[in-house]
Amino acid sequence: IVLDGLVGAFLHKGHVFVRRRVMADDTPVLFSTDILPLSLFDNKRLEGIDFSQPIFDIAARHCHTEVTETVAHLHAVSGPAGIRRQLALRPEQALLQLEEICYSRLCKPVLCCQTYYTDFFDFAMVRKLL
Image 1 (spheres, rainbow, N blue to C red):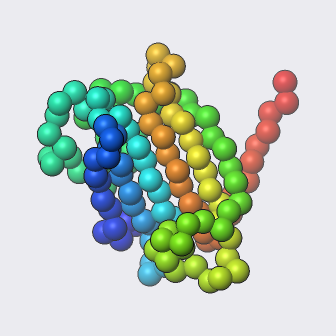
Image 2: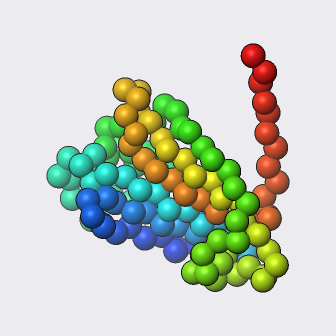
């Protein structure tokens, strides 16, 4: 599984948006949008950052912020038309949407992630009962 070159980063209303599509061979299997507050970059020039790197690595290396926990919500969705096109989905094909808020060691929200997974993936959950 590799990034297919569809990686983009842009600024909007004080936030850095990083969008990427991931391929398995020639099949698009995942589309993600990661959002970081511009203030985390501490006036660093964004042009020199390789946004194809994992987003947690970018946060650690360029924002000096370690993500230590996330709160995630999982939904079955049809997905926005633009993302459906990017993932080359059939009309009847659903997506699994994972929405995460990521927190630093100081319990500060530092990253928002929204990822759409195709049916290429098979998920399993482990639940621990207390």
